[in-house]
Image (cartoon, rainbow, N blue to C red; front, side):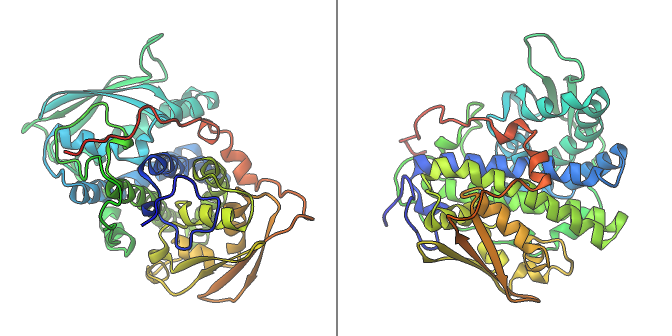
Length: 428
């Protein structure tokens, strides 16, 4: 198998497994960030019709009804199931909530019942601080208190995460926040959110993830070894990078599903679908723009196709029934067919959004992140859609969708993610 360090040419069926480890680590880090910044479109879309206090409730349920599921998925897939603090920490290191470098996290593991972690710098805080102390307190207190615990109790029902300090105030020159993690038999068992079982019953939550064996030597095939506070994606093997990259896409989709189900319950199907649509349109273009560099993608049909195949909104092709094909030098065809995503029993999956009337806006967002002059034509209706993406040199560059313009306020749109060290050559 030929591994690619860049993909300027068409690679039919491109997946993370086709990339060499050095390129994988860069692309997977971008996918992790793309899933994290979904809320930079979702929350503004929510606030168009609802209050700030209601947005906190939405965010709490979004994370509480999804993060325990994907936390346990990764424990199983990466072979580090356990009940102690080290298992909690490994999960946080592989959680899009702590997107690497955007959230610069430090860890201290004292024993399996006590540890501390801190954020040297928090991109989410830098995004929210200009909105004022009330919004900052909402994120760092109202939202984080229950959602941190929900993630921890996926490992141990008696785990508690508590702040030593956190914004709005933080020490000058010190970390933005500092937390303890403690497991004690005296702690009451935490109760999970009722929507967790509903999300767990979805096809998405049960999606398989079993990449082919590593096609390049080196790195950890799993995370069964000791917890490493300096963990980087470059530590992982070729197969493990493909696995966690797919899981980051799953995490993003699960968060959309849990938040969407809450919105549907509170405000109805149409409103929930509106916010979900705005989330994808708002962030997909930014993620595609960011993927161009690591993939070495050109602004032609091949570049558009390769980026679309790895953008986390479209990357779960088996779940979405999606194919991306280069027709000729100026045309890409994206087809959405029958799939598990269309059998979830609601209109909230990305698959449902793609076959909906405004699905063209999603494809436009994905492909115009590679070439702003690309235009999209749709054929088909109902439960199937075909989108032709045409590279039109005569067309002027498309402007941002309003929700994309809002999402660009996030520092996640412009942060430069770097490789801090080479890929690990030794295996465990």
